[in-house]
Image 1 (tube, one colour):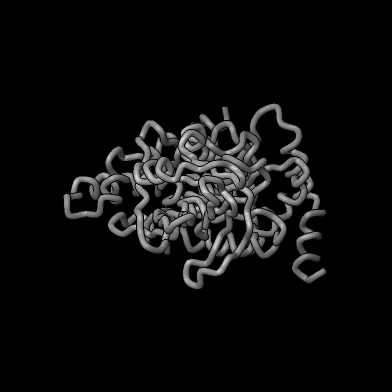
Image 2 (spheres, rainbow, N blue to C red; image 1 turned 90 degrees about the horizontal axis):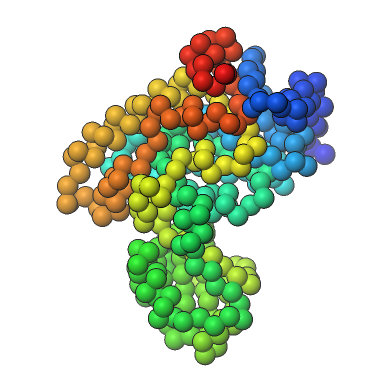
Length: 335
């Protein structure tokens, strides 16, 4: 066992961490807990140790940092401490947080992957994020399920029908796939780069039957993993209306523990994002990319005032600010 693992085990057995875990087990009302005195990586150890204590109950944890850089550090810490645990980073869709003029395809893929995993996993993951990422809503699980295309080995596949659906979902037909949202058809081979997977799929057909499914490296064309079934999801940022989207909080499992670095900062930062988004939307023109226009078409963003309502039913752990001040500023969370 490494020194880090020894230290993590010491945190797991610490009376304060044990008390946190016990408090989560014995709730007449959603937990409200304020931790004081934690600095630097101590927060990562407490979150990781609590997750270990709660592993048997498959509790999901959401950690909300103040900024993207802080969230990235926290994600790396927790991921390193819990190599066997599902630890995810949930980013915003843009190259710079709160600057809406330039999309980041890699981060859009990460968002799609996480939404897909949350709706299919049994729980027990740790998600690290920040205000700008929470500002953008995500697709409702029931809508996502309806639009998911599932392909299974041994089943018959109507290539023409799949092609029509993919085009409807915003996929582009190309000679070779190299980024999410592309597909190609060459004889009995269908290559698909789903928005919900980090590698493209290659589906090999024998007549109209799916003979093989595998992921492959788009650069080398070499196979990576053999699969028995895949689920294809459209671009979750642009292919759905506002009424088909909700905040990330609303698709989390009911028992998700939300760790908040600074609740007042979170609300203020969401208000800042909202103001900037309104200004940016007013300046959009036909010269901007269609994808960017689609994102702002229905303004599918989280209203700052809705945050407390969205998190009210979840156990909350506050990492900054005194509980008395929080009760005064956000009375609805403590009633």
